[in-house]
Image (tube, rainbow, N blue to C red; front, top):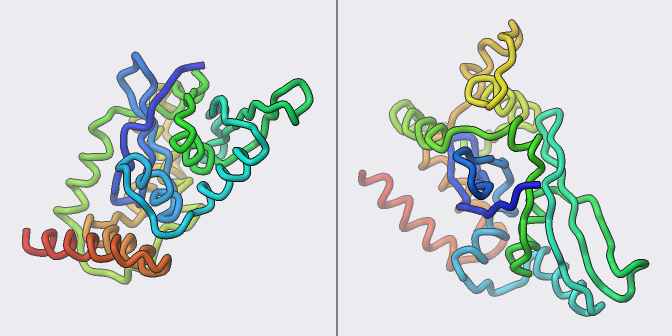
Length: 228
């Protein structure tokens, strides 16, 4: 079990990714998430105040109302292109004083940053999914060089994200697999998004949440991006 921290929420050509960095390890673990989950985590990392509570805020309030607290989050497994996590709650209302629950890593980490609870990663998950820190930035640079205007409503499906992540792991992961015919062109088939397109997706999500302050910030960032 490796102690880890959230280094950042990365805006990548594939969408948003929580960049998890195990301590004393060189590689990072990118966990791709949706705009709402990225917002729930990034607002805490950036010490931003929200006008209305998100789901993680509500869940934190419920946990605190029972007199419990989040003791740790454990990203314990990865298979089929999906990460799995467990959350551990301590409280007198639970048998043995502890409650262990399955959770999506994005939800688990949104709680962890609110409770300032430690995050751990299983060593076999790191071995399977750790990639070089330059991989995402290099992919972003390629997307900026080749990106074209397109319909921002076209986002990667769950199957496409799974294929992409499996392909990334095969090329950059700790344990490389033998090439398979079905995976050889996966990176070519998956649509990459420019930073502008991803920012447009973020803007659309902010407007959907009626978070006009965040929308204004993203609008300004889009203007800056278009002038570069």
